[in-house]
Image (cartoon, rainbow, N blue to C red; front, side, top):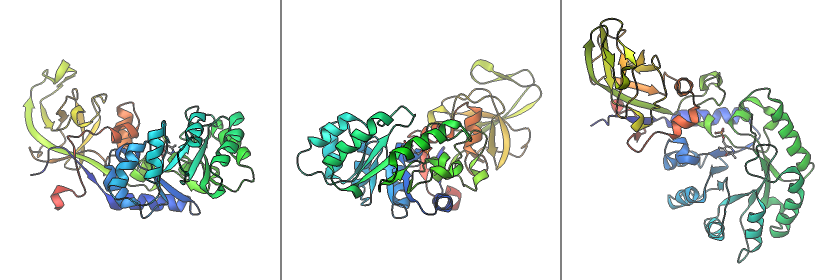
Length: 364
Ligand SMILES: *Cc1c(COP(=O)(O)O)cnc(C)c1O
């Protein structure tokens, strides 16, 4: 039985997108960022597909990394938030994870570590994001202290994170890169600056390591572009189907609050997806939906389990017909714009009820 709402994950597209990263950063090592359940695509599935192809897999938190180890991922795993207590540090050592060191408290925990700390680490500089990292005036002493704890240069990498790389030409990006490069100077450490936006638009940020996330999943981090503009392919297609079709008279309203009124005789389609599946409630009338591969406009409010569309363009549409909410044929970036959000939140936001499949049920 085909589930009502499901997401098809195209691992071929994932590999294709990884090749685009390789093309843009041919000399770089790749840390594939798959935090938050691999941006909603399923942590294990994406880790399995990627881990032997990339130099490290990055997640945000220790428990995500431990899950990957429990699944049997034996390669390098980076924890972008590092650790916040001795227990987490212990887990990082035990599971051979690579922590990001971004604050003084972590240095204190490291120097109190019982035993010999063996794992490589990244030292993070805050060049203006003002989230994690040591500021320009703190980074040199932090580096010296770290070196006294981990006295192997090849176990220390240096990284920073850009706050505005998704805005091409934003002057802050160049300032951040310069501040970072000034600190790094002639030091012989691994370095990393670039997220997806920087890989795509800021070649000067492409260092020994790159850290793409969103672009691996086929999406553009730039508001005015889609993944297709960079030859990226969507990995997730969110699918459902029509479950009812009905005829309405002019003047009738549709759904909660009656926010859409039929101007003429209307063939209305009801689709089994809603905000309970992670489809955004914020989208308005006219947001595109693909029914049988053809665009039709959403009308009325998004409810928990259903949305409604105007089927004027599709007189043949019947209950059971396939529907795509985003993915192949309809960029999630377009739906994100309609919901006044970014593609990251839509991908991460699909809920437990949505079954994740690796193949379209029609081809099984
Ligand atoms: C999430 C994250 C990335 C990846 O960002 P994308 O915009 O998805 O490419 C890279 N580096 C850090 C530190 C991150 O938190």
